[in-house]
Image (cartoon, rainbow, N blue to C red; front, side, top):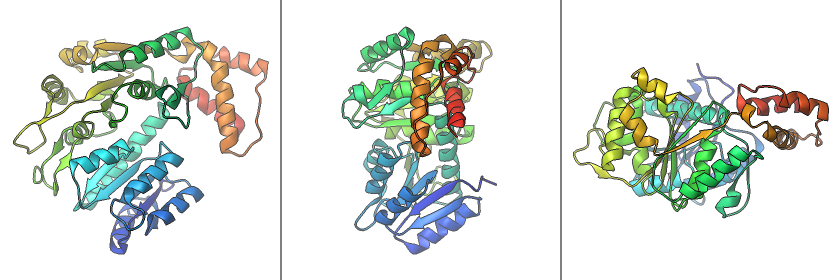
Amino acid sequence: MTDNKRNILIVDDDASMRTALSESLESCGYSVESADNGYDAIQKFKEQPFEVVITDMHMPQMGGMDVLKSVKKMSYHTPVIVITAYGTVSTAVEAMKEGAAEFIMKPFSIDDLQIVVRNVLTSAAAARQDKPVYEEKESDDAEEKFHIISQSDNVLSLLTLMKNIAKSKSSVLIQGESGTGKELFARYIYFHSNRRNRPFVAINCAAIPHHLLESEMFGYEKGAFTGAMQRKPGKFELADGGTLLLDEIGEMDVQLQAKLLRVLQEAKVDRLGGREPVPIDVRIIATTNADMRKGIEEKKIREDLFYRLNVIPIHIPPLRERKEDIAALCHHFLKKYCQINGRQEISISAESLQILEGYAWPGNVRELEHVIERAVL
């Protein structure tokens, strides 16, 4: 059973569809709220937190794209799943560019929906655990979009490097321990690139079962396998012209690594059940907390794929190697969780800060954030 505290908001003007979706997800243990229009949905989203929003694309007055944009403006990290009966690659790309976590075309089976919701929740949880600290600002300038908090010379040098390589098409491999925030550094590269107005699509290679990951990455044609009721573009197609983040690449099955290598070499993707390869133009950023060279020795990682991805290697130092950042991070987290919980601003004593700076932080920035959150509460 799924954790029944996971709230899902369904937005659809079709009453029978709302009922079917609600009953399906409630049977899995989710708590479900529904709205028959976009305006009602946004009001409900303001009043209570939801872990996933599922919205139909075509609705009168306020369509699914507007719902997606509104949710992302209020809560960037809340995943939104878009459903439509008029699925095209261009529509899917537009939705993904606006931040949609998934795109489902009608008709679809209840099993398909449940799998997508489960995968989206898993990916969102993994992203929350591994994101570094940043401040989102209301600015169109890439420099201001993500401000990474750091006073470390090592990190500041990395940011300079990332800016320098951002406009190239070369693959980037970001390595670092869990909790160092690899995905945000990937987004930092993306926002400084000339692809920043094209989609940024992420796929968590560790969160999706191996037998489903291939279809998620490469897409499939109608009838390619049981339950494939419609053609579905894969993540590579959705990221065309933009950037594809392969999160936790070290967890990918070796056989699938071979297919990925072929796609990277030929810049073409073969959908499952497809007859003709589809040309793609995608910049690849991969992240991992694994020791890639050890994985090569253990035959878990293809050496040729490693060299294809490791054109520009970036190593994110753990927090214990940049303790000069701890004070600034503490002040940021204190301010953040005081605001979230309606508390008056709290300061941290010099003695407490000294203790925090003397700790090794095996969980890195993620662990520090959780410690400060508990302290505020």
